[in-house]
Amino acid sequence: MKIGASVWFGHRPFEAKFEELLNMGFDYFEIALDYPFPERADELEKTLKDYGVQPAFHAPLDMLLACPRDEVFRASMKVLENCLRFAGKFETLYFNFHAMHFSPTFIFPEVRKDGIRNIEKAINFAVEYSKNAGFEVCLENDQFFMEEFVLGDVKLTLDIGHFAIDSHRLGRDYREALRNFAEKYGSRIIALHVHDFSFATMSDHLPLGTGELDANLLKWLMEKLKPKFALLEIFWKNMKFSMNFADSKDLERSLEFLKSIRV
Image (tube, rainbow, N blue to C red; front, side, top):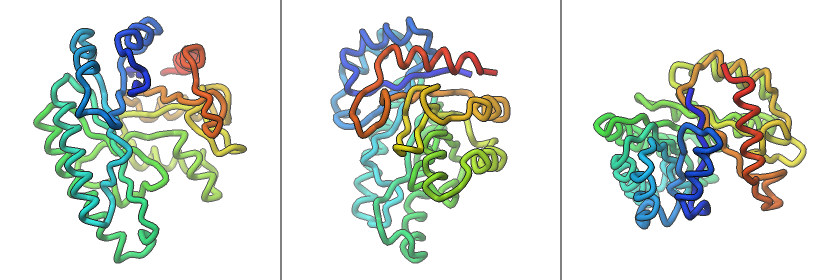
């Protein structure tokens, strides 16, 4: 299992960030393609090629691929195609994306079917493109995720913190729900997004060992799923609403925590 770290526009200069993460012992980087990437990514592209690393990519969060409004969906598909083309320049490990919509009317079946129709088109396009380019495409769970979105040959990224927070919001025991999900979709799950979370503040993307993540459950997931990749997606030092970003020490301690329970 390769262990990765998140890289985004805010980590420039990339050469210094790559050096830091490689020296910590990370195996790969999952790079967020939020604006202005991939259109203005000369520094990122040069650094990736100079270091010869195999990256993964996280699609931008302003793509609304499950949107039932066709005009928005078509614009999102253009962004998706640009991002996949960029990923195809490298020995990419996987390409991770969300199926979002921000449509309040999605609760109605006649609207939902239009959104599912669109996400199916996006998935089929992305999977076919990735097969030719030589990398996997993974759909990540989030607050918009529905099992109806698991279509075609798409693989899955299981984000543990998202899953726990969403389960808690719905009044469910996240441990039981997470085990059931892993049992059902284990053959599709190739990547884990790992971070801690707090139900008190409904925050996730926290350093490991600082919140309510059950370490035994994390160990069970790694044993059960045997994922190819585990990304430490650590953004915040305590809670996301504080805008107090995690630092290198938080990331290093989280890496040590994960390695201590790695299968």
